Length: 146
Image (cartoon, rainbow, N blue to C red; front, side, top):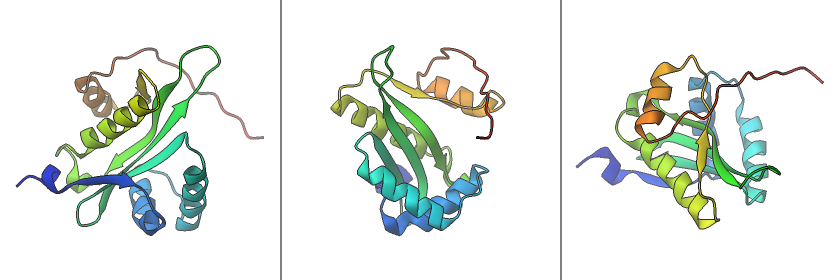
């Protein structure tokens, strides 16, 4: 029996906070569980935001997806963050999470899905292209403290 047969994708719950926090650290971000708790509570109130978890016996991945409604174009689903535990990669879990976002987007009338990744993440970009994502543009992100 493959891992995927036992995999459950569901919306995140408060009981998942510590697992989400640990996985977020794998991405290189340093949140703490109390910040995750607040963010999860806020996302739960917004119908355009979803946090999904991939669960085997424990949570082994998460994905944050949003419905984006820009003024200048049609609404779309954007995967804002996705992570699968290093020990569970290349087993189809990321694909199942992405498929969940696609299905959610279809349910709410979206016709496209978008994901962003750092240009330096060559393997990640190759992975998304293998899932039929196409490169639309390369941008520079500018930021300042306010």
